[in-house]
Length: 229
Image (spheres, rainbow, N blue to C red):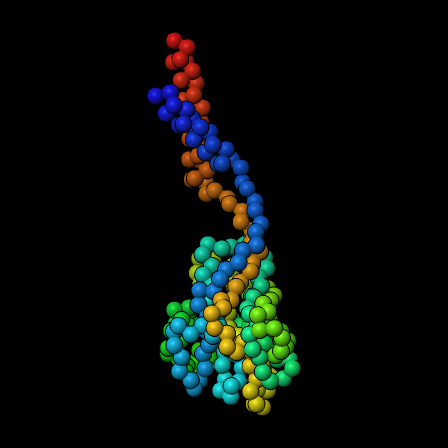
């Protein structure tokens, strides 16, 4: 019986401590892509194809990356990391990343290629950053693209939901084959974020653990009085 009382007291006191202290944490988190691939206007595709080529081959391709944000919030920076694989065309191509209005479940159904509306969506709208990318280099190199404040705002706004990024080559693509990320199978993109993991108990929860702490202290005194008899 004494052991049971001791466990109850310890739990109440620990709960009391957690209820009165806010612990602030900042952390760097890496989210692996939950889905990725390409959409175009002329070619069929399959749902299990995670190749994220973008450019002109000679048909136009635009890619996407979707991430499950879970309860992530308080993001202050975000970097998209993808493997280089193979590029072609000009020595340097201009790559833009954009917001995506197409829902994640529709994007994942790549078997519905071709689709002009989704293709256009992946290369238009709110710009998340524009980058000059070399078409040559080690295919195993991981390229990092620091996303801008618009992307960060959208990530925070979509806490608890899916977040997608569209990618498109920019400029004149009518001359020859120009593309990035060719033959990019079996490699998941990563979204690296710095986030504030501060946990603030809700008022109802806080009052509950404080009450538990007070109850625990009262119980401890009663036990001491009982033991003295």
